[in-house]
Length: 146
Image (cartoon, rainbow, N blue to C red; front, top):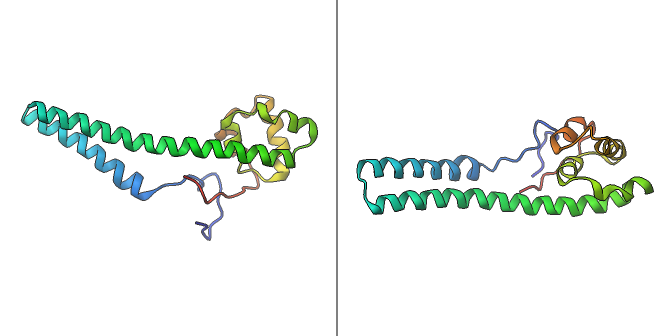
């Protein structure tokens, strides 16, 4: 879904309107309504509707978490292949020591930036994806994210 605007730190997060602005708000409203109705008419059935409403919201969040987990695993694979090609020998040998969060951040860095950023990751200066992303000068966009 490329746009005319280049991707960068401020624009790389993906918002899924149907999920973020419809599904989750409706499920939250459903819980609120179920609780409100149980307070007005406290029956076992109305208590059960609260349980089901909470389970549906949990299902919504878990579906998103599972998709992001698979995406992170693919990023790890993608980056391990990319780093073998881009990094010099000694640095490539240590690439397996990068954390999954560091790899998520590094995937947006251009090839020439990778060795310097990875050195900073190993020194402890850049410990997570946000710290890495803030240091990227030449952003490699990724429009195919979950």
